[in-house]
Image (tube, rainbow, N blue to C red; front, side):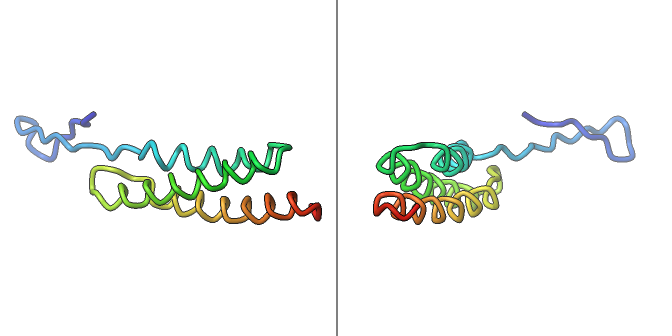
Length: 95
């Protein structure tokens, strides 16, 4: 969706497109956070791996000037890394 902005002369209108959040980065952050709220170690691990994969996809998509979400993807990858560690510790029985 574009926002219509006027600069000086009211007869000249320029359409400035908004950046859209990458769906992959949103899925990544939800999966990363969700990995901490699941009791099963296997599901924790699967969610954390999914969060890393979607985070990498979101990071690659954020290189485009039309898509944002790079910081969100980096945060998701970081949280997913912690989730992976928690899943491994949970599987071993230390967590």
